[in-house]
Each structure stands twice: as C-alpha cells, then as structure tokens.
Length: 84
Image (cartoon, rainbow, N blue to C red; front, top):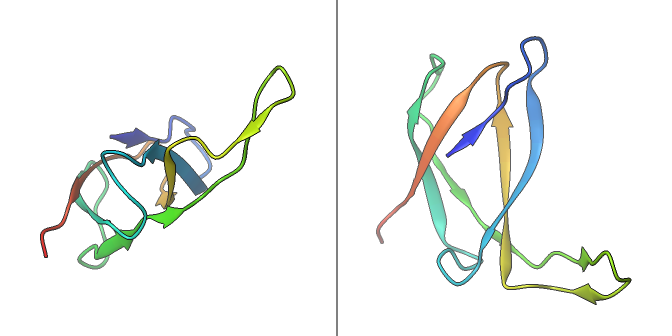
C-alpha cells in the first residue's frame, strides 16, 4: 500500500520495496485506488538497485528494489504482484 497525504499536489517518485519479496523485474499492478482512473492501470515493473547512504557514512545496495509511482492528491493505492 502506498499513499499520498498531500491535499493539493500529486506525487511522482519512487518507493523502495524489499527485493527478497519483490525482486527487480517483477511486475506489480494497482489492485485498488480510492481515485477514479482514466484508464485501466497496467503493470509496473520493479527496477533494481539503489544506493543507500547510511547515517554512519556507509553505503550499501540493501536488498531493495525500486518501484516508480504516480499518485494523485490524497490517493491511496494497493498494489499486488502479477502472475506470469
């Protein structure tokens, strides 16, 4: 689940997800949104690798995947893996 709590502006960015559960290349689909969609939402592919800068100065790639997202103001989305 992802949410944009801003009442005025949309959000376009990325969300970090656990790569063990959702590896790079896996596809997620919007299962629910509280906002009307103008078109049927398609699958969004997870992209791999991001650089994590730790508070102590260390750098790692975690086990994370990156999910590009676009949300309208006050939108909540529930995403699920596609099969196939």
